Length: 397
Image 1 (tube, rainbow, N blue to C red):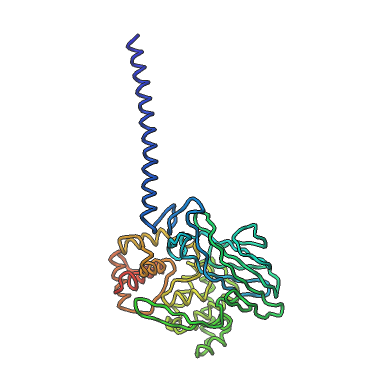
Image 2 (spheres, rainbow, N blue to C red):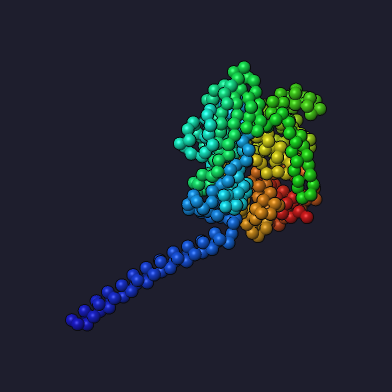
């Protein structure tokens, strides 16, 4: 009897030892994991934290919130306003936000006919949200001045510093209203009738003059501005291609935007886009519908001259982060360092299919690298963005 009792006591003792060991294991694992996470947070400003790509994640709003966004521009009609701005690049602790806003999840937009300057739902007026650095506000009163505030929201739901602006809707007769940094009647994309864009890619600088959207929507005015001859047969052919592309990528374009896309494909809008040729311009439109989900002449000009687009779609960016990161690591052996301009531009080339002034030697280098890494020839639009990312940026000398 005593021996059986001893056995039971021994088993009971062993069970308690097991529970104690398991408890100590769990506690030590949590401590170690937190220590490693803290070390990563302290040592690296760039990388994946909490499933996001960008600056260090925070748990309290006092740690680091986004700084204010760039200047708000407005293109107005009598009852609506298309607002655009640039994403904040730093936090309130001066930490760089990777990828021009890769850790910004959304924007809160507040607007009112009276004074407004803070990021708070209780500040009065109306509000809306956007996942990109652009929004359309509808249901406005014609000929009326509005104040607006844009506040970036990071992936930890911290609302950043406010960026204020103002605009005036057009009168019912259709006259232009003043914008926050510029405006025009109708659905405009540029803040002025024309502007000059300069881009630099590995030492070579390209300047182009872009034409206002009101001109691009009028084929006669566009060819006159560009010094070209109108080709209605080409317009009809390209209109079908644009319509097919819109349907394929499930994008939503107005009738005017489809005309703008058709004219862009047929004629171009600047010296840089004319040089691309009609086929490449169509490819640019298709790439934009796929990566941005809408049409932007500003972004088309930027993408054609080796620049990062100022209009972005963070939802679509995040959906292809895994693929872009996998390819980037294949090419370089490491994750992108956004403090290096060529790695930052290469990453955006993978995300938005940026083009560069043609250099056949660089493209040949990119193709050879692609074949060595992927063991096949480039075939898809993304494949060719990989070729350009290496040829023009990562492998360029």
